[in-house]
Amino acid sequence: MQLKPIEQSFAVNFKYSLHFTNDVFESNNSLFAEVIKSYTPNEKVKLLFVVDDGVLKKHPELIGSIKNYCLLHSSQLLFTECLVIPGGEIAKNNYDNVDRIISAINNNAICRHSFVIVIGGGAVIDVAGYAASVAHRGVKLIRIPTTVLSQNDAAIGVKNGINAYSKKNFIGTFAPPYAILNDRNFLTSLGQRDWIAGVAEAIKVALIKDEFFFNTIKENAIKLKERDMDAMLKTIYRCAEMHMEHIAKGGDPFESGSSRPLDFGHWSAHKLEQMSNYSLRHGEAVAKGIALDLTYSQLVGFISVEILDEILEVMADIGFDLSIPVSGGTEMQELLKGIQEFREHLGGELTITLINGIGQKIDVHEIDMELMKNAVNSLNNKYKINVA
Image 1 (cartoon, rainbow, N blue to C red):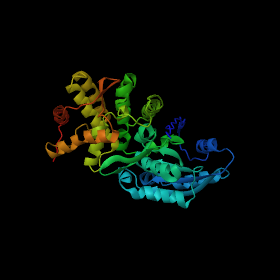
Image 2 (tube, rainbow, N blue to C red):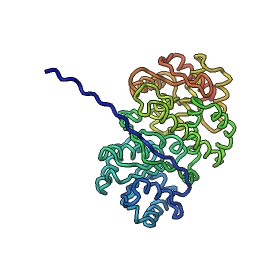
Image 3 (tube, helix red, strand yellow):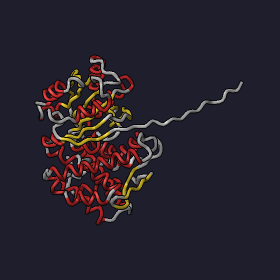
Image 4 (cartoon, helix red, strand yellow):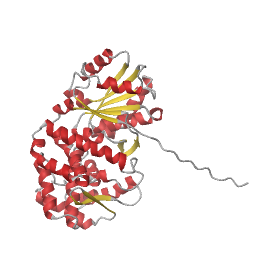
């Protein structure tokens, strides 16, 4: 008896919202309670909070504010625990942080109708998102990002992950959050490095998608450097909007293909982070990676010297160090290994996004390694790097 194969296909609709607010846990701010209520209007919901220790140092009143807020809305919100984990990329290098979150989910009986609320930078959001996505095969997650980079990029998408085998985001999941709440108050306490670093992601998306947005960043470059909040909020809003549009309309939200235009500049950024033992901020590494791929784009004839210089000048005006911290020999070879590691992470054919004009992306499937070395040297000569 010949049995025919059974085939099935189905579509799943994902929907989540991004909100903008100030002082999210102030007693007169109803947004957080309303977001929870939108899921279940008539039932009390258990909440497990995961907080970045760096955020807590800058905002020591935060846990008290969370508890008071939950008491104020006690008919709807049930506070269980506030788990504090290390901030920064170090959080993604230690699987113990995932275990701690999963244990807290278990110990507090957090189920699929409960919420994990993560408050922190992009790395902590990645870790908590991964833990929530694998516990019970998926616990609902609300992200409250606290840095420029997490508010305009890292917390906006559907990816969660941790680092392993000396590779960035080697272990991870695709799992959309229930909601994202961008609170501008957290931005006021950022150090200058973290204030600037996230702008790299806005430059990235502008260069591959929107010349008008790039020109807006160019006009506001000094304001951004000097911590003008209105200029930064407009930059965050447009970057986040474009990121979400790409996820919804790009045709590949879970990256089943080999092209990832939103990772423009990221092949070397990921490698530089790892080579620096993560002393480089992700946004700082992305800025260097963008500068490197722009320089390569010019060397292969995709863009003119004038366009290259215009973009690099804007990035330097904002405050980015665009040198590539490698010398020749083994360090150069280690950096270039990042191209193959990037292909392995994507799978399939090597696909590197470059630009052939501001707001115009082009995918290439081969990299001339000698030209890429020349691009590194060109940047380092321009910015007079001194590598020990």
